[in-house]
Image (cartoon, rainbow over all chains, first blue to last red; front, side, top):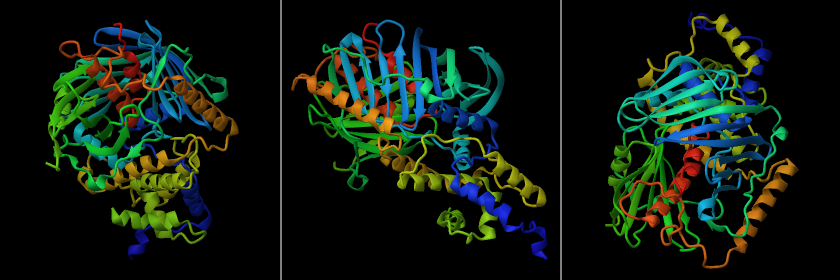
Length: 332
Length: 202
């Protein structure tokens, strides 16, 4: 009898309890079948949800910079302050309202509306099937970083359209202690490593101001106010004819530069781990074309239909070039 | 995909005492459904603006224990997501919903008025911060601030470009800031470190 192969029905109470917890709680995440992915998910959540203060070094293009970060998560949301400890005290401050960048050398404060998610990306097992088409995820073993035991996760791309990554993840609290970005040949092009890190159970123990300490000599530029306008895709004349395999469009935004009234369209693409943006704006004087880079970030510019197309992201040069060249304008 | 949604519908409806045993079995047996249920619940919570400030990522011990208990009672039935790699083809049709759900989740989450928290201190601080930013903006004489693409400000001359192209540097830096903020990353602080990393005097 077919019914015999099924497990016997339990009394209503325990079964209902399972469902009740599944339904009423947001904590019900099973561990991943893939342990490497499990660590990546835990790291992503920990970086967003824990309260910590630390100093890390950021290495890129043969430069070494020391930075300090304070990150707090409380009922008011997420707040973060990152300060460069070398040279001018450049700062990036983020809270629920604003992303504020301070560049003392130019006496300038740039404020953009914050649009970070209120929680970290959530991968589901379906996602890993997609990711595994483009990356190989594996655990490389254990290591010790800044006095903490870590597990090493290697995310190895299967093609040339994305970078590889290595994460050294704290075994006890899942915070990222060290990371490396690897180019197409496996060469390290960017590294972040904590030299000290303190975690606070109570966010009240980690008080910091999220407003810049600046004087009247600074000029403020606000790229746009409010939450930005989500673009209406219905009559979108700008399309990407062919995204690199594995990349999908995550969002489309339109923003108006407050001073010029210039509207800039931004399309964000991701493969789940790497991301890039396409910016489209009316062609100005001296519009540039071709590729450029800054550390691990590549950009490629071209002109189309009197507009400047710029693809930019933490992906190889070939990827931004292919994306920029695949942009089409249906109004032509 | 549609079949999965149909399995989850009774659970999402949350009719007290009205959830059928097969619906419960389906979720207990399928790790994908558990994640999908969690996603849908998050979307619902966000729509009702009930999102918690933080989400614990660990699987609740008591739930795990109960599921293990039930699994032991029915060894013939195995979770369907035992090997993601082996079942790659089977999950492929679900990718669309996964993407759509994640986009919806992100979108809904962004609607969450975070300043309208139940924590009065948080709301006060947020309002205060906004007022200070607005005050700072108000200090600026009209016409002084000019968009990145039209006036040179030595804001991060780090891009590798030919010649002296400060306007281009500025535009790319503005794009990088926007990209950093609007793209979703598992990399934590690294995108912010990149932004803080560029310095006009290096």
